[in-house]
Image (tube, rainbow, N blue to C red):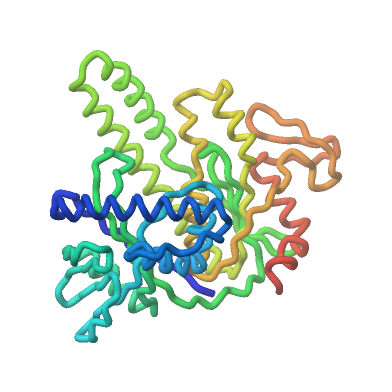
Length: 373
């Protein structure tokens, strides 16, 4: 099983010569035009004849075969792909074999070549060097690199990005149990349970600091309203949005680590019960309070858990489990305002715990088909 990790380096375009930026943008645009045709044709478009487009097309196809998400995003979602390079990492005094990207740790620099405009030399920070050394100690190797000129999602400032992709072999964990994760609106929490046949070994609920999130949301709404009248307030609104973004991102990272750590400790596969997109869309478009709508965004947490699971050899699968159908008799249950559900047969539980009862009941069916004992 192969596990990939990526280090994304970001440089201000002002650090590059203006003529280099112009040439990079030109090559990037021409390559993306070819990639769009390649995606529309189902991968049948021939490679470009001219350099460096032929080089980038060859490396892109190689990377797309290795990374399912890259191929899927380009073909299905119109994702604008980066320029893909072969890459070499020098740890000591290894010979330079003329790859497109050369990461020289002794000199603390990365060199971008083969793009049709000479060599771009960029510095590596101490933090970047440490990250790379940590990956090498884990047994990972630099397999390719990607680069693109783009704008930050947060402040729309143009930057030059370089992504270094490392790969290592991971021995898959042979699961003996299930870790059921029930995704809900974040103020209700992410319920989890370690399940084996006939019983629940451990369970809990993870949720962010709901009060702080709502306070920030209210502050942002007030500042946004004032921003339309006084421009100076806009900076305060953006600062509040950044604080909220960092708060939720930190919680998502910590929650994903806790979930995957539990999976490795108990040798489980992860079964994620994720609401249907249609249900979430109805909530967002309905009468859900504006302050709480941010609590419906758990896409990054979901992706983070999946990525960490893959990195540690933990099997991950998304499976819809019932939350309003009784696990004892199969009857439809009634829900109270406090998220308690009850059945005429006598079964009663918190709605978020019902999928756990179904996982106990269907333990063999959930484990065996995809996660052999």
